[in-house]
Length: 264
Image 1 (cartoon, one colour):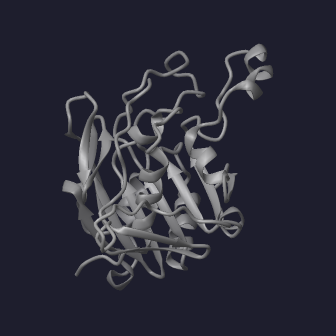
Image 2 (cartoon, helix red, strand yellow; image 1 turned 90 degrees about the vertical axis):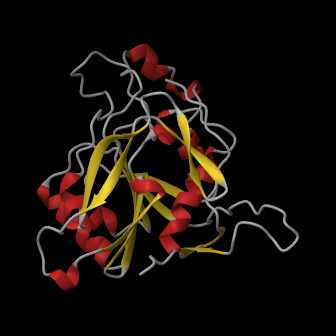
Image 3 (cartoon, one colour; image 1 turned 90 degrees about the horizontal axis):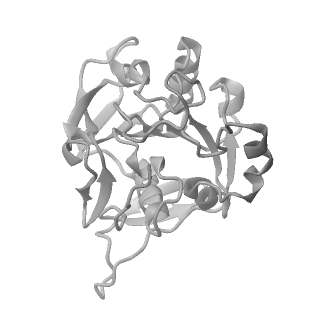
C-alpha cells in the first residue's frame, strides 16, 4: 500500500558524524533558512525487520529471477549511499558487535535471549531505532498466515517493558493517513499507537531506563546505561517501499534524536 510522505525533519539542526548523532539548535540558520539534516558517512547499520526493506520475499521463481530489476526500498538506498547496512537474522552479541546502530523496524518475534542481548548491548553504548506499530494498515502481499508477510502486530513488548514503556494501540488516527507535527515539520501516521511509562520489569531500579515521551507519546526517547534508544509507535514511514523525496530526511531526523539528551 503506497502512502504519501510529507515534508520531514525534527525541529533541531542535525549534525551527524561518523561515530555518533548530535541534535542541536532550532532547525534554521541565523538567516532564517531551514537547515536540512545531514546524513552520516561510514556508519555500520544493522537491520532487523519483517517489512521488505532489505529484500522483498518472492511469490515465485520467476519473481526471484527478476528481482534484480526492481528498485530497492528507499531506506536501504538512503543508508547504503554512504554507509553499510547488514541484515540481522539473529540479534545476538556477535551480530551486534559488528554494527554501530540497529534499525529494529516491526521485527519478527524475538526470543528471550535476543531481548537480553539487545538490552545489554544498548546499556554498553549501543544505539537503536525501534519501530513498533500496533497494527500495520498495508495489505499483506501473501495469504493470511503466510510467514512471508510483515509482522502485522508489534511483538516487542518485552524490551519495551524492560525499559519502562508500554505500547498502547489505536491512539492516533482512524486508519486514514495523516501527519503528526514534529517541531516545524510533519510525519505521516496511520493508526499510530502511543507509548506510556510504566515500572520497568527486571533488574534493579538504578539500572532502569530514563525515557521521555514526545509528540503525545508517539515517540519515546530513552537513555539506557551508556546507550540510547528512540522508539516510534507507527511504521507508516517504512511501509511504503517507494517513499517520497523527503522520506530519508525524516529517517535521518529520527536518528538524530539518538544524540539528544532527555529532559529531566
